[in-house]
Length: 314
Image (cartoon, rainbow, N blue to C red; front, side, top):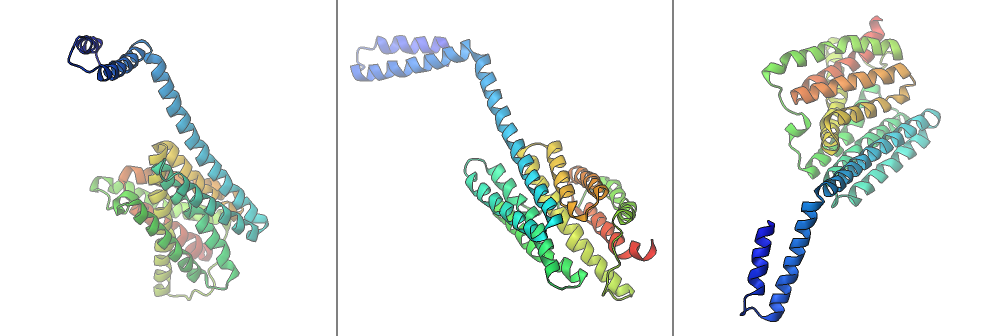
């Protein structure tokens, strides 16, 4: 309120004879409070702005600490799986329940943080499933299908709870002007798949019969159950919530680091570096085009070359 308006009202209330005494006292008290607030804002505006800025910085710093803490928790659980897979499964299970509890705890106070934590649950869930399945005997192709089903269900549940549209998580046809970017990232898959094979040297898939039809079916499974699913989790839902929580570039770095950490179990440092780099590129393409279609196909082709093609020809 302008100071002149305040003094005009103050003078009016003091000189109005028909105003009851108690009402006049309340009015004067209210006007004094308004004047006090006006004087503070007029005399100490910089102090108020500094306090507000400090509060925002502290809140943002706390969000970064939360992100780094959970990233370290997942990394520790992954390192533990190298020495004791059952202990690793238990660690990921504990992280999963902590994330769910934390998400519920802050749901009223900070919806963006709550949704981020809810989405982050998918990371330990994927590792729990992938570490548990080898204890049961399935073919490798069936293994990918069986893991993908509960992850798809959990992912769709997260989207439904958060009220997200398909477009929000990148299930969206890119614009024509982005065709060169989409084509480029798909072409990148072949050299990346060969490089990753040279790092990991996985054995050929046993139980996969030779033939064009079987190769096509296996390739489609890789594109849907690894390429599309993992991109929907990381570059789709998780990247969307992380960027809303912090900012674009740090969100991309966080998602790429998490994707890298989940490759620790391959026991190859170079593979972790490659996972971070390709994850970073995929994240940028997702932000540029708004779509995960191109990167999903690229991711699927990398795995096709890694597991189906390269073991036979390299």
